[in-house]
Image: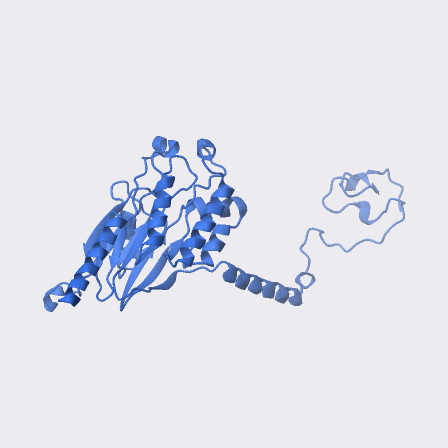
Length: 358
């Protein structure tokens, strides 16, 4: 070996003496020919060190198969723990009479300016009134842990962890009384927990205690001998500031034109629309229209003039609309207030009793 002046290599992993001509070259330097003691190695193969390793040196087929099996088992476990439903069937057990379905959402328990007495009265009425069930469309708690406006956090009357205990006890009571026809996701509950924690204990609780939709869902509701289709979602895409029911109508057109009811929540402003449906494509040939309507519904809230909504949106409007589903023919009767639906059912019962007496 010729005697040349050596310097320390600038390569970060090399402390061997290198010829000046090799300094700074990347990635090959004289650490492959000299160790710190100065003993010479044999020249390495003249292959660039940044070339990828041969495919046969990567994960062997046995590793790949094991990884795939783990992925399959994990996916099945997740499906079992957090079932994802898009369509489910619910049978309401009525004593040969119509059923009342209350459309309830946006309780925001624990938030500022929430009518707590109204929430408790609403739930008590549901639990103690025969022939009444409810669709729970989310935002049951305020559940604000972090927000860009700290008034939403500091203004809560109950801290989020205690809100969660209240909700779990409330759902347990409603489920035991068979009062929840179905429930679904919402931005304040499942979405916020998944964003902040990566998972949602509320989703687990709902999915294992009732029919639960983690997005848009189609509920096949059976009352007596009649089946109804209900499209439900906490928030539908396509909201209009001019027509509170636009997004529900869009959902029917795009997802389920045969639906009988489409309901949404989130915007804290109740509304109802009745749209008669033709009995066939050519009703004039049948001589009459079918007694069948499409009902579009937006639910209200128990959170009224809270500081955040009052500044950036509009104060919430209370409202838990209800629909009477007849059991002997396909006939829907919607009401702005659930108590009015109960009066209708009482009148129907009285009429039936008089008819039998006559």
